[in-house]
Image 1 (cartoon, rainbow, N blue to C red):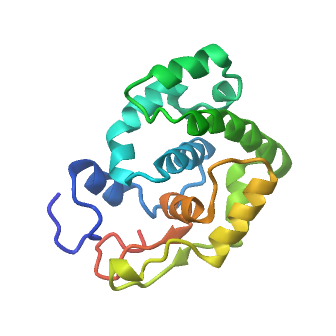
Image 2 (cartoon, rainbow, N blue to C red; image 1 turned 30 degrees about the vertical axis):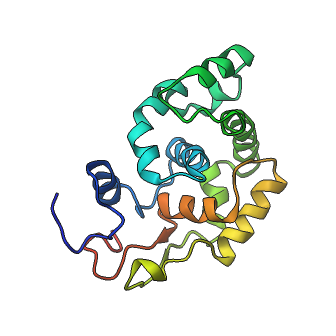
Length: 186
């Protein structure tokens, strides 16, 4: 897994695997898209590496990110999650997973799929940026501002512009691999 031209943020084993196989790769799978939306929300204020280290624990705790199940979580399940040391035990973030699952399904009902909804913001086209250094990569954009605003209007939580920019990178709408990275435009 050694590659000196890889984007500089990918340093640890899980970072590298995620960078090389998922980050910036276009996804139209609603299950994966929901997982990334929830994980990006949990990442707020933390490092992505922290989330990757706990990702399998999150999958177990949140029923493999099955949004239909999460939408029906009751107080007992939420209290169980708050006691789970394998995940981020932030009450607002845990409760937002339920809120977001419900809102996610409303979007699916309205647009046919969440993928259709989210990709419609770019007319189903990817945004491939050509950054030379990590310091050039922005934390937000006009697109993430617009999507964040729309998601908030639809009842989603933990969907600020910075979170949404990272989410768009995660699901491949935005490709921010550096120009020197061999995984650019994959």
